Length: 141
Image (cartoon, rainbow, N blue to C red; front, side, top):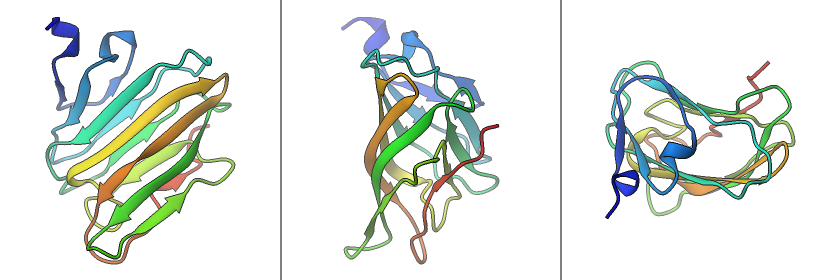
């Protein structure tokens, strides 16, 4: 198997690029970190992000590269078998996981695909604790 398909463990903030394609990017920083996606262009590129270490302070943040890109779709967030599916808003550009109600607990998975210029499609499932809440916001300026 080529090295490019091996899992990549992130312990500090990073910007994803084509070298991450085909790999599973694992978030492994209990103190949190920020992952920035490349600008969307409609390339079809897919990035898979897995929570490898539960965030215990700060947040795990996944954000777009610029103020014009958005994230569209829905993610399941669950503390137990009755979890919820939370859709994005029209302006969502950031996924924030706090290690509690919005995900960030070990085992969560986010899949992002560059589907059009200005649009990332999102799917996945986040493990949470407490009452589930939206991880989506419009925070990139």
